[in-house]
Image (tube, rainbow over all chains, first blue to last red; front, side):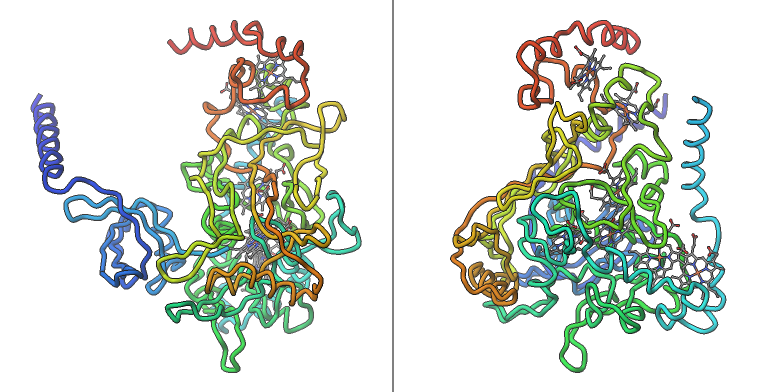
Length: 107
Length: 455
């Protein structure tokens, strides 16, 4: 019973939190091409924080990557600092979560 | 009979499961003496390097006898083919530095970056230097540092491919993993999943989920890789494979209603219901990227997003300047219905002889000038008499990977309903036959029973 209550509370909080987020900065899908200046793997290996330099504006953008295939590529250095990549990410509440993260490649 | 099948299936699973168990017996010696390239391996595996030089992975070509309009005495493959998924080949797009773009940036490009040599020993080279240039570890090391494999200029200004030849990489030898193969196969066609549009992620493919990997199905012997009959995979090592073989028979289902179809319908048709990746490219118009380089304009979808087109295929290939695809018919007694991804590409044809021309990508990558690319390729190939005119080519790619979970395989009504996935008319059935094939009589009882079981 207690457990159900706490789940309800969490849900309520989550609903509130997402409502709050919506009012401040709604999730927005952005894309960019940039050069990787830093890759930091989380200790648990389940995510990585990547700093990119936008090729167009030179601005620094930080993106969180959490899909397994891309993380694997960081681990065996198929994607490394200095590589140019193309990414699509959701920007919400100042946090950018990558939805696509690929090395640029011509034919 | 049934018992035998079970043994075979178990055999396959065991094969997959024993992969990781044992350590490479050469490890200690490699740790002691370091790795000096293939000659280190040859101390215990004599002849492997020379053997490798004779394969498609080194030559990017072989003799081809199932494709129309080819000289059967010549070798064909990525080395010299011309089509519109990638409108060049290893010869005209030999690895090089592109001229500076408007921002003053350059980069290296070339089809033969997907060759396990060092470029000094290139596609199809032979002799002792070539043997020592092979990157054995790109396929065999489970600890390969892929950042060490890249194009650079050596001290004399020649463009070479570097490799990871560290003792660390050489000390971790094993059977090639999916990752080793995907080092080149993932980005074939100009980027991740562009040409093939299949994912080999753990949860995306039923075999990979079970731990069955590339080399469990492609059972490589003496570096000869078995392959299938994709209409655009011409070069082969002389060994062919299909879904039917050591793991599956031609009648694999306990339900005879499925087995009755396998003479006419390929396994892939029901079990690989979607494809993906690029479905059209225009090599006459290059798009400027934010980094100042240009790329051929490309229409693409995600993996598993495109419905395939179905056609009869007798495993021989029609090859004209405008079309590369399956030959076959309902009535030739040899064809089955297969799924394909149709791709259409625009490039330049030579008005003088009607042939498709190839393009050196270095000029258009730098400045978008596709005709300069055609001129450069023509010069490399010694073609003097030409007049480039744009035109489209249609090509069919086989759809042979990413087997879907069986709950998503095509069932009776997916094909026998009036709005089924097969275009029965195009496939050669007459109106009376179509009426018979699309009556609910065919599937009603069965689906009703299934529905009742699920409710």
